[in-house]
Length: 379
Image 1 (cartoon, rainbow, N blue to C red):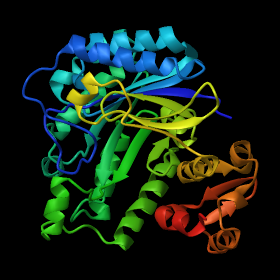
Image 2 (image 1 turned 180 degrees about the vertical axis):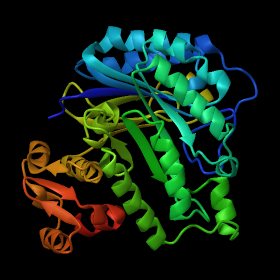
Image 3 (image 1 turned 120 degrees about the vertical axis):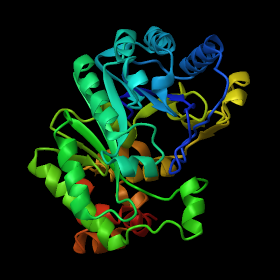
Image 4 (image 1 turned 135 degrees about the vertical axis):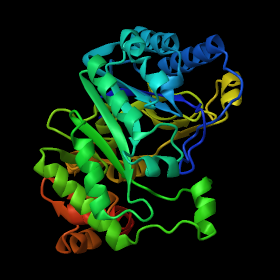
């Protein structure tokens, strides 16, 4: 049922906390103990290797936090240990997220030597005022310089941008996107700004200091983005991810395709199938110091067959290719009717929100209100 295995490595530290970010990231004044943290990652890998039937990893993703703050030797040791324990497929994708500050960009060659073969840059905007508003430490010139350096060291690279910001117009976004497409390789991730609980932006939003674009403008921006990139040969293979054919992120597709992935590092989540065939949801302690001391998972729960099927649909309908009924049958022994309200599904199909032939897929219209569509059709 689960043909692929990936590895997610969470590095929980940043130089500063961005006001929109709700990820598990922490700012520490004192340098971390590199040897101690490296040993803890080794511990997490070894612990998981005893629980599952090892098979070659198809992808590794270093996320955060700011993984480009990691010493290259730490990255190298994690990659080497993962290879020792699980092995790699011949075409393994090893991605590291990086902030485009000039100092960190100089480390790209060291990361390449360590085994990284793809970088994902947190550009976020090519407008200096917007970057300042988003709390980023780089400007647009540094971002473009980092992209240029990435191109020299890696055959595959990507970068993220945030749009649908307060007071942003479609024309402003068009000009920014025009500049972006001149510098992308085969892949780009474009996220609409959302107000997340526990963030500085949420506190400002609650005070009325931040006014977000309305739903109509958000939808118009999304449709424009999809159409604009489609004309340039970039396919929206997932709700927020665009690529030319063949350059999709393997780790993204593994995650949204509901294959297994190991999660290590403070706050890392995983989905693994143990040697007895049970599917587990795992989560490491989010506090870095607690994670260092305690090798047990904060969460370590069996996911029953119905919940697995629901998660498969929740993830898979973000992908353009959708979900096959065969995948649901391989989990539950039954078809979509096991987890979907088939009458409501028919309504969603009639409204042009979902297509269902051999696979269940959302249309572009359906993706605009994906969460509402999902809550409507799921039992």
